[in-house]
Image (tube, rainbow, N blue to C red; front, side, top):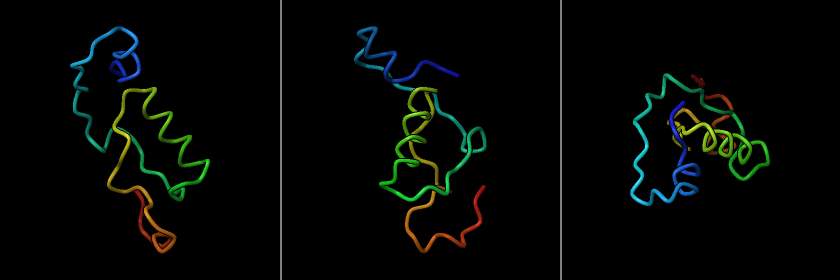
Length: 69
C-alpha cells in the first residue's frame, strides 16, 4: 500500500495527501462504532494508508441486517 499519514508525519511531510483508494480495494466492517473491534479496524486502515471510512461500514446497531461488501 501507499505511505500512511502516520509515515508522512514521521517524515515531516505536513502537506501529505493520500492517494485515492477505491472502496473495492478494501473491505467494510460489521464492527459497531465505538467498539474495540472498530477501533482496531480503523487503526489497521491508518497503518496501511487506507481511508478510515468505508460506505459499507456498520454505523448503527440497526445495520445488523445490512448487506456488507
